[in-house]
Length: 143
Image (cartoon, rainbow, N blue to C red; front, side, top):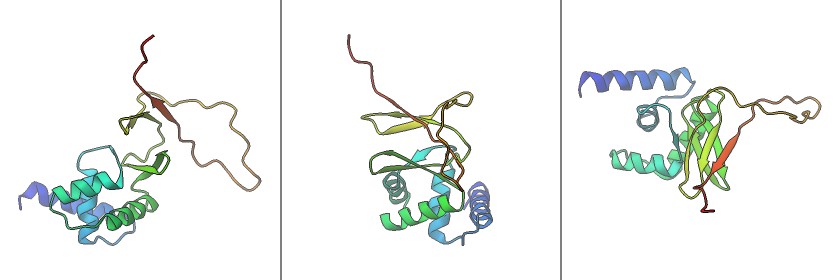
């Protein structure tokens, strides 16, 4: 194992521990795949395919469990975009997304914050925690 790979594994191990999770071999392998390529949006199925291709012996159910644990620990942000289709975002900051219909591709809206006017008052005893905006895109239709 080269020194660069070892340093990355230590950083991922530390990140998982600091999130309050036990750094199991599978969690570390999945976290390494998730965070090694910068900010991105992945479905559980996509991460499972990457894990299998990387030789990580893990079931799809384990991938789902790990992704939900990472989300609860604050390492990921969950995006429900298309019916049952759920993406996990490695960028947990407040930001919004474009979704390309027909391609199942999602990416961050660049630039400043998006303003939402006329938000409803939350029910008594509740507060708005976050507003997620997904702008759906499709190729322009011929006129």
